[in-house]
Image (cartoon, chains in turn brown, blue):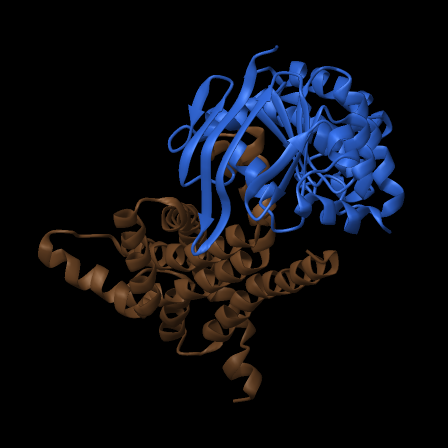
Length: 223
Length: 244
């Protein structure tokens, strides 16, 4: 058998493509859910960490530190296999989405904090001097500037979340990787695995490029 | 005599071990133009930053427009007091129009249409009607500072504070900002100005306050301060600043 028949078998590719595409849909749904929840969670956490009263601030710091320390795979296994013992039974999607969002929120929180702290002090003072309420100060003045600053690292984090969705195959979620291994078993041929790898690259490579472009543009503006 | 609009009694402010203000007593009346001068580090900026609570004083009392300000009453002061900063501090992600309209819309509760109408009038008043839709980054320093003045005016404050408004400007732009301030002084608005522009102080001020080492050392009319300074520290300060 030639290398093409083994790794890039057209017939196998066409046969297993529908399965792979259904896996891709699951992967994208999972990834986007986790990215959105992680974004919102991270923003709230960063604000609590920066501005809340001491006990809440310390809770936020503890959350951020703990979930940046735990390996995602370990968290996922705990959520899916251990929580049922205390009566919390999540679907594979629910378990994977929770674990990914929880960790992404912790990383995003640190990114947002850095972004908010990078907004010059004078901006806060000017907003105070105009008499803005704390919410308006954040919403109208600080966050628009902070979000611009964090576009590259937040995009980078989103790429990581998208990649980490592949771990969900461990808890039997029919994502792209899981479907690919399934298809490989059915077809007795590794072509689906190669296809899956190429699909991941095709989706994430443009995003990786985008981060570089953002970074260059931000550096070019010199602020 | 008009009503006092700002009353400071025994105001103390320290940053750790360093005392920036040692018991300041100062009353400013409605419509008065007060210029604060003094060597750098004398507490001038700290004094006006306490008036709108960008710095919170450690002890003593500050009454602005009849309301004692301090902990928990921070915004009460900030809403009634306008501030023009040395480094402009315009909001870089908003147009000139939006910068000026933001306060009236968000704090005074005007509709955006009304707020922008008011903003336009003020922008015309500082001579920037051709730059309304530009962003701060597209303006010169002098133009940015005039927007800063319009932004402060838009809140219709009882008092306008100026914290070295021309110190960050290239020399050729100082004049345009001082002109706007001088025009403003004629309209009866209360102004407290920290500046090193002695020409402006002499011409525009009703009263000059000289500070040194966190204390008010001497105050009086411009003619008294410039022509007959009493305290040796004021004399040497004026000598140093006017001799070149």
